[in-house]
Length: 340
Ligand code: DAH
Image 1: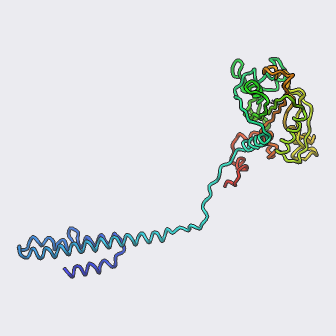
Image 2: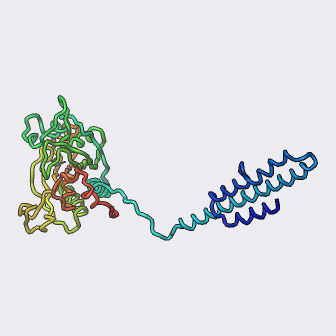
Image 3: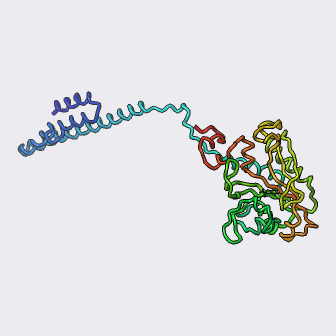
């Protein structure tokens, strides 16, 4: 028995994996193992020899089992240490960066417009995209047969309802709901049956309105100048041109100096040196009357601009459809961190 134990200890020293350990264990403690054989002998012995022999063999068995389990533990530890060594991490290596999402260029421009007007103390109002024909046209001084309606290629929905063709009907809604003095802008989607490189059936406008007792065209000119210079740069040259809108009188269109040729004349500005950027004017008395205001008491200033056009001119984008195709190569130009 001593010899068996000695031999077992020797044999086990060379072993470094669980597979081999299992084989050796079987040779000692398995069904046909040498220690198992010794155990089986117990029953063949006489009663007096049996006790002494039995104790010894069982001790041997326990001893062997202990050796095997210790060895098995130490092999497991060895394997673990090896794999820790192999899988060592270099925590000083830079991590993998995930691409950050970015705002859509129209959202960037819209937020910038809103920021500038909020800085001038304008509030923000919203109106529905499905609008009454009455608010979209009639109450804005465009009765049924008014020729200006032709310029708005309208999507009619139902009797008296349409997809708003501009954000101007929000003027009517706010006039009806709020108490003056008023000073708000109203950004949102508008719809027209039109599609080419500079027209999209859905696009965005920002409407603006100021209502108070003492207002003049010079206030409008001042606010438009501050806004456009903040948006396009302080050096931007502006031009106020007389124009016509049914809901304002007098009306003007504002041009900025061409962003491409800086006023020298090029294809973009049709060699005029200027680009039309927004419409504005003094609120027409008929609009006030329609909303239940006395035009002798209240004065109003209004303006409206296209957000896509502002974005196209600011970023030099020459096709409006790029905003709506969601081509990743286009969008990633507006990411704050480069998307890889
Ligand atoms: N609603 C006009 C359009 O869609 C834009 C506009 C022009 C709005 C002059 C105004 C304004 O409030 O005063 O073309």
